[in-house]
Image 1 (cartoon, rainbow, N blue to C red):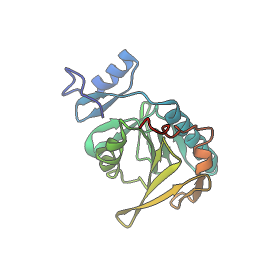
Image 2 (image 1 turned 180 degrees about the vertical axis):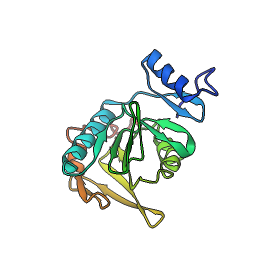
Image 3 (image 1 turned 90 degrees about the horizontal axis):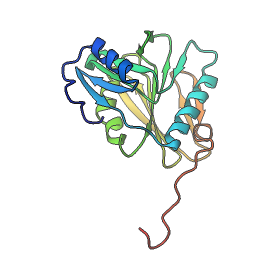
Length: 196
């Protein structure tokens, strides 16, 4: 999460929505404070889009909807509006005109500026969502995924990597191939010898 905007403490939901409309920008909202959101890289955008497309295809026969980073999520327990990279909203989900609640799956593509937040406070807030069954973290600098699955009140971690990697989302009865999630993604090469 970025720095709080000046003079935004104590904003109501209506004032927050009005701020976003007036500035045509996305902000996170946490219990009355508003935070500017950082932009992402080309790899980040491509992985997010690939993941959304893979989820659309995998859940075609399920009563689910896939949303990208333009849809707000509201986490009532923490009075928190945020913009996950990808969300899957199924039977338990709640839709509003400008936000959703109770997704079954949330996906975040990790970047250096957001990784600590995605793994820490944000995941803590996500865990309070009753309908959430899966939390997927995708590395943008290598083909590697971490899938957290809710099981008997605990969160179990499964990792997958490389072209042959496959993620099994048992709560949804689907699989996602890493080769599809990372399609056309070009990773940064190693530094030449002697340049650090």
